[in-house]
Length: 264
Image (cartoon, rainbow, N blue to C red):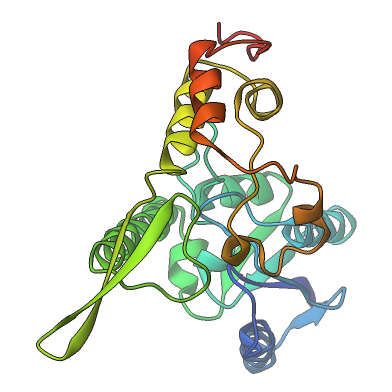
């Protein structure tokens, strides 16, 4: 009996300095070797820094799926292998949201390709379980995102950051409490109104370029915020922000602005 054509795909949602993708491929290859009866029809497809939750996985997944479909068309069947089902998709499948695992399953099934997983194979080989696996993948990512946002907000409120310059529009106030340095981020009274104004105009439907070019005062960001930005910072006007400039723009909030089509 001829071997089943197989394709391997591996992915990581973030940069991969520890070679997680390579270890996924190694583990998946080992699974295929243990099962026997499979032959790879192409070198493994892999990509990193491509989210399966915020957006659908990248072009390497599309290439892997296309290769598996072509193999199935030629040989009558094929398998697409991953280390874990979440490597394929973690979206909800809703409008304007990332693709769901169930979508990948049925798309491949229509073309004679079976999904296989080195770690949770029963969830991708049984149609009764694929909906469960799809929901679990999306819920895990959704919960993780919620916890990260909550943690980052709490970190900011405690005056803790991971590093880098103080965000433009804020000031860092340091004080001592019981011998411990306490950081607190407060609004910069001079620059915060600029960003509030940009927000309000954006919510009114004006295009970013129109807001920056015709309404916002020509400003230069604080030197600490410009460090490391290279040529991009050189294109800004050197005219500093002044109370007079801010008040003049306030007198004509929509002067020269062009609304985004369909929003006004």
